[in-house]
Length: 319
Image (cartoon, rainbow, N blue to C red; front, side, top):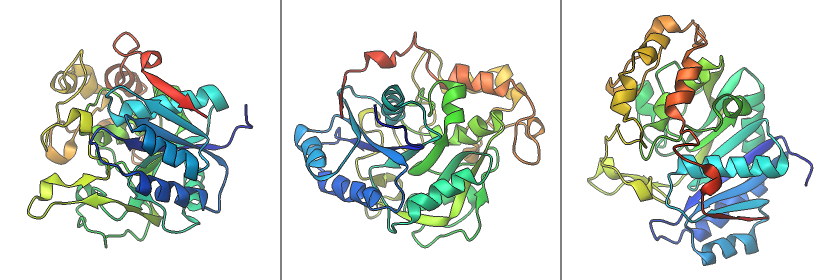
């Protein structure tokens, strides 16, 4: 076993759409290896990519581990599984950097800056700005490549942004048993992130100090049909605007109706007013005042082993 590194980087790719984006993968991974920071393990989390695509990555990039998953699964689960496999091999990490396949660093100092930001405060999550599909609508800012914040933005309880380039603290894994909530099949995962942090007395920031490229395409005249490099939830494509698309046993409609969730401060998709949290459950620093919300989130946003067993995923680990 290699000496453990401080952070795990998980570059997430998917071949379900049938597109061959392997040249982009190689270029994006190279921007990671070009960084002036090396205290990390680099992994690739692959869902149903072809042998040719995987072989191209192996032949051109020094990757520490590739998790080849052969089941049709959402990225929340494939990412979590890669984190779990890397912990088995390397031990735990201080943080886990999620990278969308379309993310590409544009300066060799960005990775070090991002991790430095994570270490500078009581953060459960730190998000980099991206030039496309940031989700600035949550903050009333224009959604275009030129939008850039000049100061770090502390994400209030109930708000969110899109997941493309983001560090998750090991505290989330230790509390909830997985990093990202895995009941979601397609949309809306990010809308619960602020609650995951607040419940364990952590904060979430969007850093002003870096902005990376994110490949994103919006068809002309179809503003709601924009998509990332590999497609959004390709194996579980839901209509735009869907908010109740989760794995059983409960629907999201049932989860947001549970009295204990309301009592302890749970909110969901607040941008659209689906379920607005009780602000009295949180302090001025956006930290939860009770210790019950964390239990609610673990029980209802993460799948139990009875419902889904990660050890039974059909996969191959390449090292």
